[in-house]
Amino acid sequence: MSNTATAIGMEEALKKLGLKEINNGTSTGSEHFGSGDTIASYSPVDGALIGKVTTTSPEDYKMVMDAATAAFKKWRSIPAPQRGEIVRQFGDKLRELKEPLGKLVSYEMGKSYQEGLGEVQEMIDICDFAVGLSRQLHGLTMHSERPGHRMYEQYHPLGVVGIISAFNFPVAVWAWNTALAWVCGDVCVWKPSEKTPLCGVACQNIIAEVLQKNHLPEGISCLINGDYKVGELMTNDKRIPLVSATGSIRMGKIVAQAVAARLGKSLLELGGNNAIIVTPDADIKMTVIGAVFGAVGTAGQRCTSTRRLIIHESIYDQVKNAVTDAYQQLRIGNPLDENNHVGPLIDVDAVKMYLNALEKAEKEGGKILVEGGVLEGLEYESGCYVKPAIVEAENSFKIVQEETFAPILYLLKYSGEVENAIEQQNGVVQGLSSAIMTNNLREAERFLSASGSDCGIANVNIGTSGAEIGGAFGGEKETGGGRESGSDAWKVYMRRQTNTINYTTELPLAQGIKFDL
Ligand code: NAD
Image 1 (tube, protein in one colour):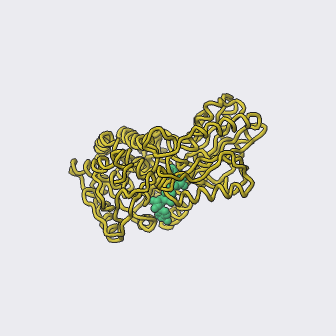
Image 2 (cartoon, rainbow, N blue to C red):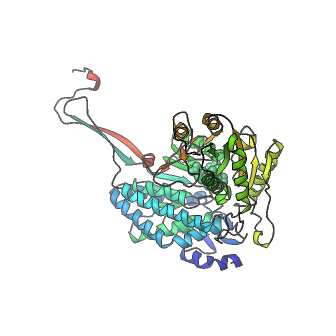
Image 3 (cartoon, helix red, strand yellow):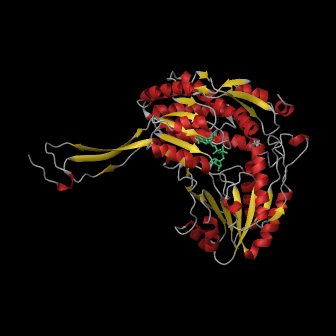
């Protein structure tokens, strides 16, 4: 253990989560195995090795799928409210282990401890939501056009749901999917990011204990580990009717094509390029807090991070000065130290992409307002700490059109009506989150109207990041169109069946068609 890890009590946290130096990264529940290569997980906080995880070989994968398909046959016939009871127990276990799991999320991924705890809280919240949902998986009843007939629809479980998740929400995205899928009667196979494999093993240990205590079969919750090649085992597997994939647009395009080629369903949660529109009627103080948290929180590595500020020309200088001043107050450093605002990027490759983006922005004519750069010194020895940067730019710049997963904020200007800002905000290929800061009701409603924001999330007087689990979460266009979490997102984890029952002695045909024998 490194000095930093010892200082924050990592050893104790790993012990509580059942993690060892080398962990088997494949599991069907109680059984942990793994005959593939080993991934070493280094903390971006201090560069220290946290532990190793064995990956899933094709033979291991076969065992997982055998267990999952067998478990589905049992799990689907357990009444949904009883499945909800298991999710309730899982939520309780998460409450118990919130601190060590939050700490691991922070140490393995690099987000602040507060955000790590927040991620575990999201898991708890979705469990609570799913428990209630387990008594509400209802369809509609319709009036039949034929006399003596009853018509209704019902929802049945789909089968084995494959979950592929990204590094930046190493535990919550799995829970969003799996808690709903479980109450819906599905079983899940999860491949976490190869950058955060220990978070995956820790979560699997937690649910395995709950399943064993309830004498449930192996295979309801399965874990596989490895890079895209392990992910491809699932995307090409006909036994998986739904693949939920969270990650980059590049990955989503490959996954969507592989799943569509076998006519499976995919739920895609891909990249964003989120903007806040700041109108002349904006509350500047609120705008600054929302924009700065949105841009530098999780070191700009949220799918909902604020990447563009579209400011009306009449208040442009005022907002620019306020935001650049706020950046001078930012403290960068160990994310487990609550005095720091900004932690590290996930790895040195991410640092290269950040530097590359800043270079491109300048080449395209951008003006650096707050200088970026990599931090050096003992505290930053992982090489992953960078300075949040601000660049004055144009929406048409190629680099502004892309999602760079780092703390770079582009300032853009608009003139005239709010529609001109909306046009810029919508003028990118991604469509995840958007926001407007205004006290003008007319502007706010225009932003929310059918000709307003084209994103899956549109907020008024709130930044772009930090969604609640009660709403459906996801985005349009190249963000992939998927919806997870609250509202009626559960429907994607089930198949819909329309049932018509004839309780007469006649056999009338629909549309009055005559067919007499
Ligand atoms: P990534 O695309 O590199 O990897 C995501 C996951 O996909 C990993 O588990 C990876 O192993 C797997 N993968 C990659 N190629 C694959 C393939 N061909 N077949 C099967 N699996 C494959 O993304 P990342 O760097 O881990 O995460 C950052 C990205 O995720 C950003 O673009 C971010 O916006 C996005 N993200 C989106 C949401 C959302 O809800 N919309 C949430 C979190 C992250």
